[in-house]
Image (cartoon, rainbow, N blue to C red; front, side):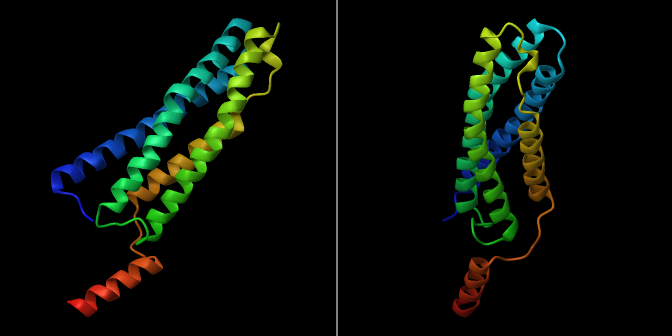
Length: 168
């Protein structure tokens, strides 16, 4: 099912905005994570953990979920399809993977923010820098796949193409 052109462009625009917003929020989160991990000032480290908690809870998670949902709608209602091209499948799988890890990591970040607020010296708390950078790499990979599309059809794409040739 394809959408009318104006609605299709709107869905694509919302998908791009949520995806780019997610990427930007993760970049800000990485900066906070670096500040929490390498900070010397106790108040700054506490503030970084608090900022990480707010950012992941109210910005990153909503944008990640919105990106997955709107991207799926976009793929299902466009000529690309959700299961026609390998690059779309890889993007979907990477995005779902990133969202699941994000939801699991959110609990740890909230716990670390609570510890940082009650600890006499939060500078010794373990950071989540590895997860932050890993998430950034996954999202950058998804962005690269969006630009450098490979034309290889997935099995479902081949079947649909064969059906279209038989009917046409």
